[in-house]
Length: 210
Image (tube, rainbow, N blue to C red; front, top):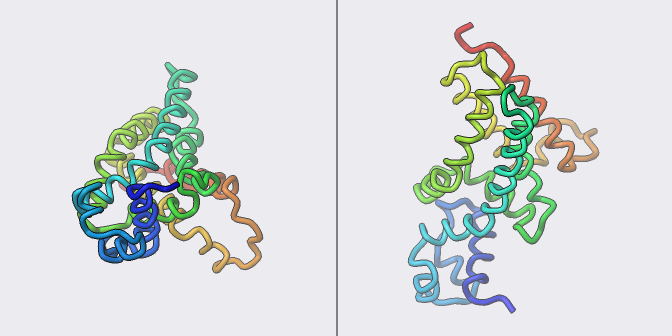
């Protein structure tokens, strides 16, 4: 049986995914969850803490898988540049694979993460910085090794664009069918393969000052 805390988290996750952080009200969450204001304040203390709790219960496994993939690359290529495509895949695939794991939030949480990367609300920005700062730095470190010809600033911009492409795909993966109705399948493997190829091509291009 779902306890009150998990019930609130489930409803909050659904509302944040559908409406965004800024547009979601605690009153709407309380109404759907069938709880009173005291329940949210008892379990979470307020909206910012609720946002953090929604993310924390899902994002740990994603970042854990990223870290394992990064560890494997570092072990396999201790003294040489790791393959660029594998570095990009190690960062992007675990997030995109959420759609296949309903117990970790599935499609709903994937959409939520897509929203989070675009969200301007303070709660979203703070959680992103705390939850993803360390793993993004590891991603940046491996990309610098995989792309030694690029300077640090160019790498930073290209990480920014890579995360943007990933988050857009997470938030609106069906858009490709609007552009090309002949696309019959948008399975996760296809999405990862296309995204990695796209980002790798961008990372391999010359810097903007060239």
